[in-house]
Length: 264
Ligand SMILES: NC(=O)c1ccc[n+]([C@@H]2O[C@H](COP(=O)([O-])OP(=O)(O)OC[C@H]3O[C@@H](n4cnc5c(N)ncnc54)[C@H](O)[C@@H]3O)[C@@H](O)[C@H]2O)c1
Image (cartoon, rainbow, N blue to C red; front, side, top):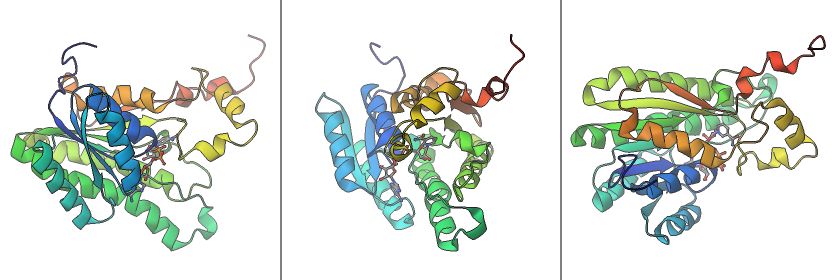
């Protein structure tokens, strides 16, 4: 794409959990579209590595070492990115963890840990960066949830519950902050190969079984998710607010495709 096709050139964007996987893919895509990117992650070395990947070909980025459960650290990161690039007008809430476990005996600590990163962390970042968006006259938020937000996922502890919470948080923001010209939308990735999910695919037969269940016949990539994130981050989605985009190769449309049919 040539020129400023996305309308993102010179905008200040912050992507949480951007040291790896989907966040890294979105940070790189935003930078390639001309945005100045705060690569926020509690893995400082990983964030610096992604900054190098962006800066080497001519992009603009800084690393923001920050734990999204720590409100003081988020405020510090917000101040650093504003000082470097001006107010953040694009926030991508993405930092997430998996803490598997059966609900029957899930320790409270594990439940709370997942909710504090995957749900409360999204709220804290939204609240903090919204202040910069208001001062700048508006902004846009993209929250990476999951197809698990609508589909209970066995033995994943609080994961689906947190993702369902993200979906509602986004709609709540869309209503409450529309007068501030802040938009809020959700991306629901399906099965994407990243560090978070790699151990699942390392088990024999898993990739083949999953691909067989996905109508698009492949596992998704962070770049697949990043393309949709660019749209929601950009002014080209100016009237899209309180919405969700699912990026799953039609997997969640395949319930009836998974049962045997009578020879037709
Ligand atoms: N991979 C998938 O199949 C998939 C599917 C649907 C949704 N998602 C969601 O996409 C998002 C990104 O997942 P991914 O697969 O790229 O995972 P990943 O493990 O590759 O990346 C997650 C990043 O978040 C960072 N992080 C974790 N806790 C943090 C904290 N407290 N503060 C700051 N940073 C923190 C990690 O350091 C890491 O860089 C998550 O919200 C995940 O739930 C992933």
